[in-house]
Image 1: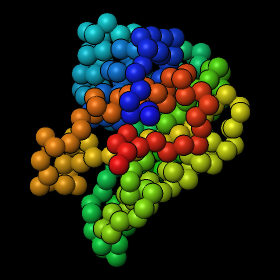
Image 2 (image 1 turned 45 degrees about the horizontal axis):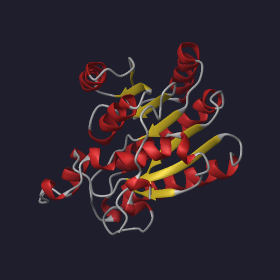
Image 3 (image 1 turned 90 degrees about the vertical axis):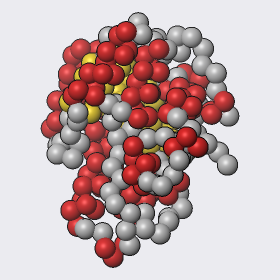
Image 4 (image 1 turned 180 degrees about the vertical axis):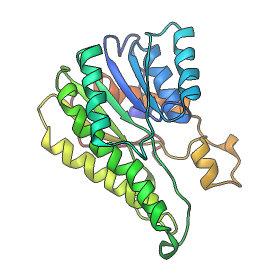
Length: 248
């Protein structure tokens, strides 16, 4: 079970991994955890002070020096991602993994009441940016011997739920994108999977469930075994799967 995985020390040594939404929540925890297991992390996010805090934490913990990429996915273009891919190639030579963690929730509302701009923004951040970024990064990912790309899914991306329209549809699209890529690159040294964190103590969860007691939820740190499993070489033969961090 990935959620019970015990990662060996040095699991991610010599690997370079890009994490989106790395400034807070699960993204920040994943970055510090990957670094603790030896990875050089590329921290992508829109809020530089938050990225700098994660950077400092990694360095203080003795991890490899990370890199920071300030980028707002809502306004980013294919050219931004192509330039980023070229910079990664120039600086690191290869890219061993991507964690597509950044997501936008939008507001919970009846489907007929979803504002047009909010629909566009959520799809831009959750779907379009992941698609265009992956497209641009495939050449540098293929330079690694066994690269892993992890998309972030949700329970509402597997079974639709009333009032979760925009976010749910974006996560259905995420699952579909992962499956297409996994099929396309099967047995070609590049694997694609989804991870569903489940109910987790994050700011996004709090905005969706403001009355919920956060102390009843798992923390991002509790979920890291599954993230380490999918990013490390013990999952070399896992492709096209959607993993639940908190299986029922």
